[in-house]
Length: 222
Image: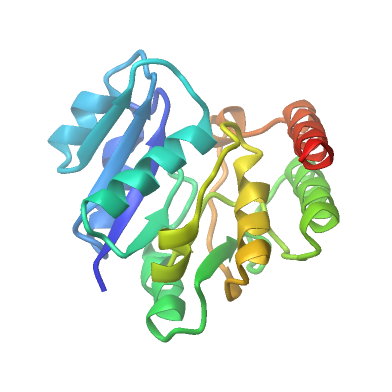
């Protein structure tokens, strides 16, 4: 296998180097998609040893993820691990998630932040529950943490995925792609670390509702 870590990043100059270093302990090749950042994220990512693609404007997490996936395909990689740039995910979990693809048990692995005794704020639990409900309504697939950005796309999923939603709603779109294309999906528990910084960077309850409305609207207009 030839894996690469893809990290969508927006104004993460204070965190991106540590995330890259953590990922490179397990996968040497890292690609950072700098999504219209106005700080030094791109420069710091290059100095940390990552490949860097820059969006001149902020296009959204979904658009940045798809840019990274498309670049990985063109560069000849057959597996993509996506990790958030704010440092909330434990990169030490990469080998365990990757093993589910290596052993051919999964085409898509989605980390489950609720599968361990993680200190997850109540508002995040409620927002995630809403995301899981909307995802199930749209796709017929239930997973305990559909909105987690920590994923592994195996060779089949990487070759076939085609994301059209540019914002956080892309997480549900990934599950819809999996259901439509009949990928094997595995959910595995993963460590997550929340701080004031990561809570501020992620989806709020209000933005979660907005995301849910976008998903439902797009589904009914298909």
